[in-house]
Amino acid sequence: MKTLFFVLASICILELSLCQNDTTVPITTTPEITTTTPITTTSTTTASTTTTTTTTTAETTSTPGTTTPIPQGDVIFNFTVPNNSSSPCLRARFSLAFDFKYPAIINGTKLNATAYVKVNSIDEYSGECNEAFNTLEIDFNSGWSLVMNYTIQENAYELNVMRLTYKVTAEMFPDVDPKYIGIKEAQGSNLKEFAANRGNSFKCISETQIQLGSEHVDFKNYQAQPFLPSDSKTGDFDTAIECTADLSGNSKLVPIIVGSALALLVILVLVAYIVGRTRQRPGYQSV
Image (tube, rainbow, N blue to C red; front, side, top):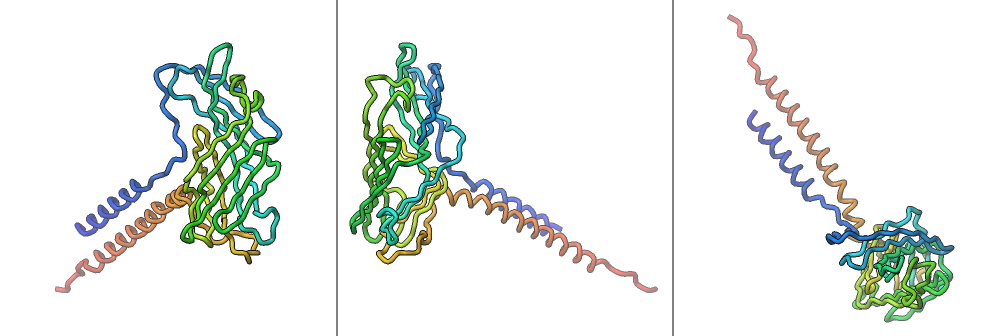
């Protein structure tokens, strides 16, 4: 009987430790607002190609409020470079959105505003292929563009440089300070994002946020493979390297599977104990 209790106690301790080790990697966090009470005004503008949500915060606060995206299905775009080629050097698909911070003026008060712009359609795209880099350039929203530059070294590639050109207008950036209206550019270098070996694609269904100065580019449902061989005509991606965020979601199944196995083990131990006790019971002796 003591052996049974020892086995059950060991199983409970093991299952508890597995559950405590299961962690979820958060994608974004909401910063803590300072004690100064922000003045928040929310306005929504929907263009034909993008969805914009803005939040304005009093300039006296040190941390502007975050933005809640408008609930809407993600539009996934597919790309091949060269465009529509039967033997591309780069193949990609993903949905795209942006987070911006900009100065706003409401009722004569200067505010810090945050705009979330979701891309629902693109105008066109192009790219460039050579042995040193593969480039994808996406044009959208009548004057906006996103350039993604992949580089390769020692048979491993990565997204190394990304440049965003966008147009600040009163329509896309409600209550914007008139002095801020115009063409803006944000760039990130030496990013080392979406890295994988040549011959593999990189896949990340979860949201990936890449910072370009004060702006952020948000990718979801991402899968891409640059530096494809010249004879690549499969029309699909090679074996995917998955991002950590996707893998951590799958790891939640481990405690469930282990817990079920341990519960079955407990039942087997109890059955074996009962059978053993029954066999050890002494019979009647004749006089």
